[in-house]
Structure formats: structure tokens, C-alpha cells
Length: 196
Image 1 (spheres, rainbow, N blue to C red):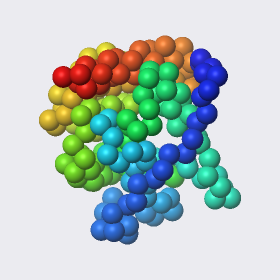
Image 2 (image 1 turned 120 degrees about the vertical axis):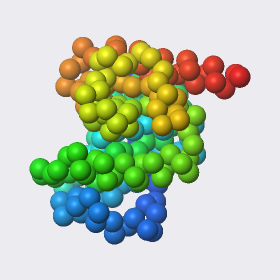
Image 3 (image 1 turned 30 degrees about the vertical axis):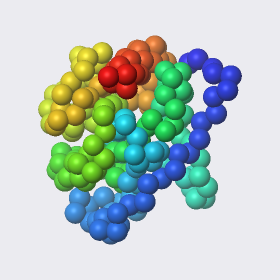
């Protein structure tokens, strides 16, 4: 990956979970012992990034850290010209799964939370990262980032772009340039939208 001389990943501010969802048990992931992460970044940002789940924000001792997914996402965002104020990150699942679970049913239940976020926030663009986010948001179980990237889609009333999951990019560095291309594609759309 490219090294940006002034790039320093940071743990973005976490948005407070609405009181009505603090003790949500509907999908069953509360049994896994992970906590709810509603979203992070600027809650009023024009771009909503959707990932599959929040991953880790703390180590085993409870100390905050920036995981590889967040580092890769932030690096691509910065290299594409975005500021932190432009971006808000949320998830299909608001809790990190720790073991096997009923994936389709759980994602379907948790999509209701995401739809509520979208209704409230009304972002200018949605950016789905990874097949799980794409399949859930597009409501197409066979959807694949590879065939959908590089295009603007209209999904649930939102202008939507897609890219590989940052973790896939970390595992397969040959995807970095494609990942960056998709961020730059989104940046171009966003800049054109701002100038209209």
C-alpha cells in the first residue's frame, strides 16, 4: 500500500446508540457478548459508508485501538481527498459476531436499524464495502462487488457506489489500486454533486 507521509489513522468518535436500542435482543447477537456500535465518524456526513459489522475497537484488555479495517479505509479516504467530516461509517450488524449465527435472518433483522439511520440521516451518497454490505443493502443475495464496482447505482432511493472490503484489501494487496479507484470514483461524484 501507499505510505502517506502525513497519514495517521485515528479511532473516529463513536455515535451514541439510541436509548431504544441499547438493550436490543431481536437478532440474538447480544448472546455473543459483543457490544453495540451504532456508527462512527461525523453523524451528519454527506457520505455513509456501510460495512458488514463493527469489528474491534478495543483489545482484550479494553484499550482502544485502530484495527486494520479502519486503517485501510482511512488511508484510502485520505488519499482520495476526503476529510473525516465527509464520512460516517455504520454497519449491517451493529454487534460483532463472535461465533456462528443465522446469517440471513440476522442481517434481515438488523437491516431495519440501518433503514432507520438512512431515513434520519439522508446521506448524499452510500458507499458499500464488501459483499455482505452490498448483498444486504441491495437486497440481492448473489450480488458481487467485482461486477458492480465503478458504477453509480440507485438503491432504496440513495446514490450508491461499492468497493471491496478493507480487510480483503489488506489480505490481498493487489486489490489496493482497485480499492483506491473506487474511492476516487466516489470522490468525483461527490465533488460534482457539491458544485451543482
